[in-house]
Amino acid sequence: MKIFQRVLSLIMILSSGSSLAGQDKGTLNLETAIEMAMQNNHLLNVRKFQVDEKQQKVNEDRIKFLPVIGIGGSYQYNSSLPSLAFEQGRFGALPLGGITIPLPAKDELIVMGQHDVYNAGVTVYQPVTQLGKINSGIRVSKTELQIAETEKNRTALQIKQAVEKLYFGLLIIRKQIEEAELKVKLSESKLHDVENALLAGKTTESGRFGLAASVADEQQNLLKLKIQYDDYLADLMHLTGFDPATTLIPEPVDGSQLIEKIVGIDTSMNEAEIRNNDLKIASLQKTKAEYSIMAGKYSYLPDLGLIGGYTYQKGTVIYPENNAYIGASLKWNLQDILTNRTVLKQRNFIMEQAEENLENTREQVNKEIAKTYRKLKQSEELISVAAKIVEYRTEDLRIKKTRNTAGLNLETELLEAGAALAKAESDYFSAQMNYRMVLSELKILTGNY
Image 1 (cartoon, helix red, strand yellow):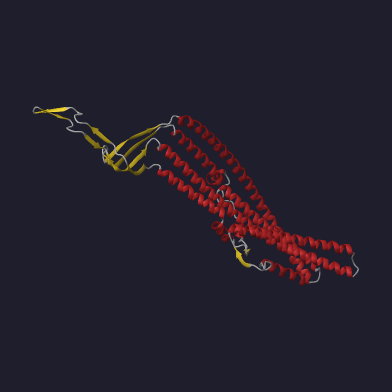
Image 2 (image 1 turned 120 degrees about the vertical axis):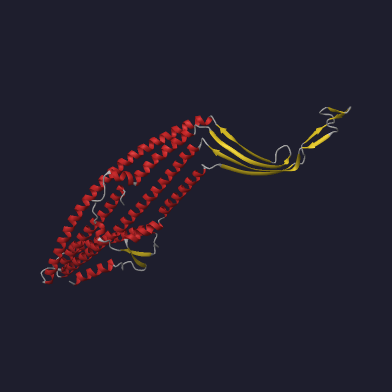
């Protein structure tokens, strides 16, 4: 009975996390782990910045609707000034009262400017025929923004699911470590009994070596589980952004959160077509290709727009100082017609790729939903069977305790029953955790996560 008590004490020490000494310790629940991952994960932050980038691209494209306004000015110093020279009588003579007056009456030199010349002006250009192309470009940018937002949501779900898997994995391994600790103690107890029997001459040396090897096997299995636990914990710390020097012990999860019924989940493709992130991205890629083709068709049109402006100059006398003007501008590069034809062909091929990718994604999601739903139903059956085993092992341990108290069995039989119950509880716990992880996968596929 004392051996069994020592085993229970060891389990309590292990479950309290005292085996991880020398570091700062703390507890961690699933909700906090997910929340910290959403805040600190670098990949998710990258996705958020990508959304901001695409939003600014939409704003940039919208500005193209506005008139193009150009403001400029210049200053020029002329060392030599232009001039007009008119010799006397250049334009003939004017008879006046019997006198003939030459035009001009004398040689004239007219300076046409000044040494300092100033120019300033503003020009306004409003595109007309390119408005359709600009609008299609905005739609392309908006679609890219939607794709970035969907990718951010998909990354968030993937990180959340990864945190859940690691968290549940840690809980499962802790249960398995409890089981392994009991098995080590059981093997040591059997070895101790054999060593006593060997001293009494009731057994052979080979039996002792066989049991010693069993003890080593169980210790090796325990060490593997502890190494796996440390690896899972390190991955969880990386995802959540916690200080690696801190030891976090995962808190148990409420059983009501594990076994959630799937009645409210639509496992058909109806919900998935709207909410599944992979399908949304594939559909948006197709939409983006459609808008790109539309923008390419507008490129066949000439660039026609309205133009107006105002100029001010000083220093050149043959031009007015102030001048306002309005008109139209037409540009049409005929070479672009040939180039645009090949561009449209490229975009049509992109469109075909997007359609094929959408169909492939739809088939893949449909197959994964059916597969995951099947796994979920199988997990329910495993939980039911594991629960019965726990019930039977609990009753067996109760009987063994009673018999041990009455002195009708050995301590090793009691330890064997305890180890068997620990294994049954570990399997039951693992079945529950597996159900939760499969359920999360189904929710992601159907868009209900």
